Image (cartoon, rainbow over all chains, first blue to last red; front, side):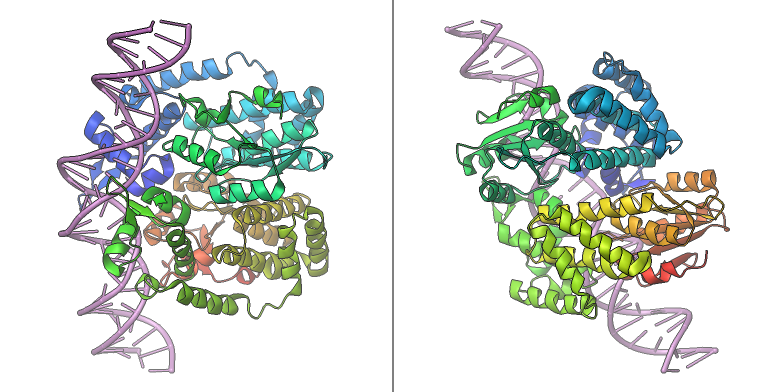
Length: 289
Length: 289
DNA sequence: AAGTTTATTTGTCTAGGACAAAATGTATTA
DNA sequence: TAATACATTTTGTCCTAGACAAATAAACTT
C-alpha cells in the first residue's frame, strides 16, 4: 500500500494530477488510511505505470484514464505493433534474451558483431533505438523486472561509451553541443547521437543530462559552437517546454541553431520558429550542419 | 524566474516543504507572477541548493533556514574541513583538476596509477569516496558546473565498471545482494561496494538502483542470498524509511541479514533491531558474512 | 489543403490546517 | 557514567476544492 508521494515517484505522475484524475475520471480511487490519506494498491500502481506509458506515446487522459486493465493492455499491444512492427530485426529478441540470464558476455559479443555488420549508423538507428523502445515496452507490461531493465540499459551505455571513446576526434571540424534539459535524465539518447555524429567526423561535446539553460548558453560561448542538439525521451514532461525553448533561442546569438529530437517532443504540435525539430535519428544522421 | 515545480526539481526540496518554510521561517519569500503564483529567483535557488546540502549533512531546518548566504557558506566551510580535513591525499586535487579541462586521458591514467599503488580497498575508501564527496561539495558551492560534475561522475563509473568486470568471479562463495531502494538513483555507492566485496572473493549480485521491495524479496529467494546490502546517498530522503526497513525485514526469512550504509542513513538515530548499520566503507570491507 | 478562431481538455498552483514520524530534551534506572 | 523510558518540539507530507493558462482538438474561413 503506497501513499501518494510514493506513487508519484514510482509512476512519474504528479500528486496533483493523481488527485485531479480521481475527481474528473473516477480513477484511481485509492483506499484511505486512518489519517484519511490516500493509499494506493499494487494493482493501481501497475495500471498507472501502463497509463503513463500510453500517455507518453501521445494518447490523451480523457480517453484512457478509467479504462479497464485489459483494455489498456490491448491498446499497448496495438501500439507496439505500430512502433516495432515493421522492424523485423531478429537480432533484437536475441539481445533482449541475454538479460534474462545475465549473459553479459554473450550480450557484448552480439553487440560487437551487430556493430561490425551494420556500421555505426545503422547500428544506432536500427538496433539500439528499437531495442531501447522494446525494453521500455516490456517493462510497462511487466514482462521485464526493473533490475533487468537497468542491467540492459547499463550494458548498452557501457558498450556505446567504449565504442565512442575509440573513435578518432576531428578537432578542426565544427563543434556540436549535446545535452538534455533539467528533468530529462535519460543519457542513452545523447550517446546514440554522439555515435552518429562523431562517425561523420564532427567534433561533439556531450554535456550530459539536466543541464540548466544558463550553463547551455555559457558553454555555447565558451566552445564557440554553432549547433545545439537537445534530446527528449518519451518520459519527458513537455509542459512549459515551448516557452523555455523560445527563451533559450532568444538568449543565444542568431548564428547558433537549436535542434530538438526524441520521442518526448514528437507529440508537440507546433514548434517555435527558431527551433529545428528532427523527427528521427535518421534525419539527424543526414543533417547538414 | 522559476515556478515552484521547477525549484522542487532543481533543489530536491518538495513543493509543500518550500511553502511551509516560507510560512514558518520566512524564507524563501518568492515574488509572484500575474497569476499570483510563486516565482523564485536564481539567487534563491542557489541558496536552497546550499541549504539542501547542509540538511543532507545532518543540520536542522530550524537552525539554518533563514540564515544569510554568507553565514551558510561559512557553515559549509567548517563542515568540509571536518569531512575531508584529515584526508590530505594530494592526488584528490589533481583528480578534480582533470575535469576542468576535460582531460579524460590524464584522469584515467591517474586513476589507474592510484589503483595500482593503493590496491582496490584503499582506492575505494581513500580515493573514490572522498572524491565523490568533494565533487558534491564543490557543486553546492558553485565551484563546479553541473556538466563538469556529470563528466567526473560518469568517468568514475566507467572506470570502476571496467575494473570490476575484469575481476575474477568466485561462484562457490556466498552471494551478496546489492541495491538501492526507489528514490535513490546514485549508483556509484553500489559500484564501490561491489569493488570492495569482489576483491574479497565474494560473489556479488548488483541489482542497481531503485529496486522495489517486492523485487528485492524475489531476488533474494531466486539467488538464495544470505546478505543484502542497501546503499543510501546523502541526497536520500529518509522519511518513512524506518517503517519500510522493518517491513522488508519482516518479509524476508530470519536467515537473511540486511545491512544498510551510506551518508543517507548516518543521520538516522535509531536503526530497527534486525537491520545492521554500517558506519563506513571500511566497516563493510571488514564485515564477516 | 492550410491557416485562423473558438471550445475543450489538462496539469499545476493556491491556502492554511492537520497530524504522525523523527529528533531533541529531560527524568529515571542500572 | 551510560543506557532506557517518557515528554516535548520540530518537521515533512497530505488534505480540500477552486482557479487559471497552456496545450490540444474542433470548427470555421480562405
